[in-house]
Length: 104
Image (cartoon, rainbow, N blue to C red; front, side, top):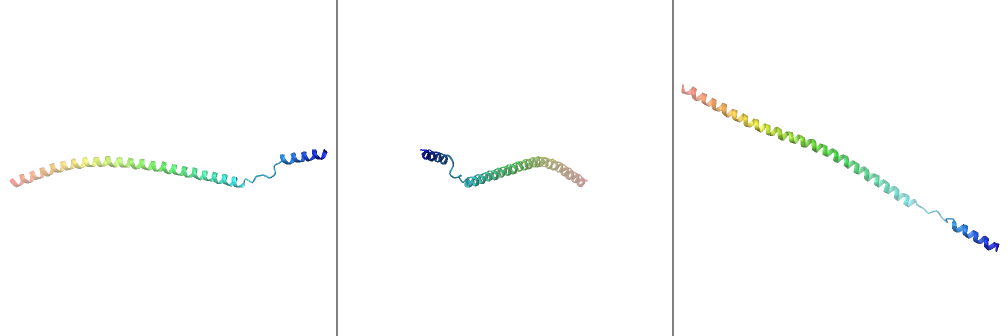
């Protein structure tokens, strides 16, 4: 009986202990690789967001320049028309002066 009791105790002690520790090296490697991939993706996203922000600022600056150029062009066109009118008036006065001179 003692032998049976001892055998049962040994069996219980053996079954309650883990036989081997599970090797989790593959899972650790996979998790580290996935973590690195997340870090790389976050870095890429941050980089792209910064590039977009810079490009948007550049576009806004260029649009402001374009608007100014368009305004300057409109003013230059008005100036040209005014100068053409003045030129035509002065040319007419000169023609009249030549006619008067030649009439004397």
